[in-house]
Length: 424
Ligand SMILES: [Zn+2]
Image 1 (cartoon, rainbow, N blue to C red):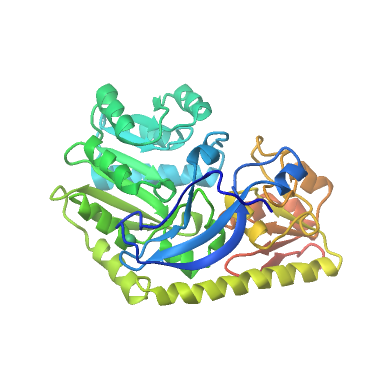
Image 2 (image 1 turned 120 degrees about the vertical axis):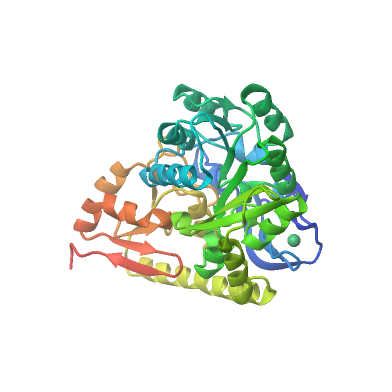
């Protein structure tokens, strides 16, 4: 296995939220490749550069974070996949536009900025539903072109002071800045929130939506650990971050998408009344022990046991002569396959719907990524669902496979087989 420091920007020695050095490493998944660098052939996939995948806990503000930061240009610039492919995601966007429109009182003509807005899917929905003006800020040039084509102006930059100034100069000050599934990927979170504060209208809102640290632990979502995903976030550290920048968290809402996310609303101090949801979330985190190391130390053992069980159960199926394929070449799938040390001896292929991924090979494992046609023509006995957050959609859309007797393996929060009615 290759392991050197090329690509590692820095080893993390301080908490990125509160700057504390009182950090405890609690989970070690070994050396893993970058999740989204799909290879052109199996050999390149197996020989891919690997980095240490470890998670640490800040004893001061309760943030969990990776111990290394990989150069974002290595992870984000060469590829960029469209977000609007999933129907479930588009539904989520529509519901979000209506909900935020109501709760924040957005008016026609207000400006909404989406940070890392991908192909403009979310803003396009905001425009249709609310009649607001929109600006997408996303560094991926290929996606910017798609966003612009559907009427979403796009600034091709990473979010920061420069992008914020450009928004103000070209479009004015936003009433709302949204950042969905981006906060946990950001190294300089203080600079990120400060740039939003400096950009927003005085009574404007920054809405962060990210996978919730409580669900991460409670549902054993260890496979959501990958190098792009630098932080695993509770409400408490975000509340402290806002406070340190003279802002307040005034509302928190739970969402079920992606295994449990929260939506955190931040404004300037005094701009909004703080709703009871904020104290309720922080109190629950505290009561259930998420602000103390004990939960994390116990979790470490649970995850070791979970991985050992997945390997043992799936190996037993293989020994019984079963053929296994997987569904969705997602980042979390990559973590799971590599943490279990699976390769083509275990998983024949991975089915995926993204055209750019088909014909390529999963990093580290060398497993080929194929279209649904292969699943129809050469079906396995078991389909390992790697994108478990879309399990319902995946099962519903592979009816022919299950009717013919195919079964599904759900790996998280523990090994489980479902389906197979057709044959029995
Ligand atoms: Zn901290």
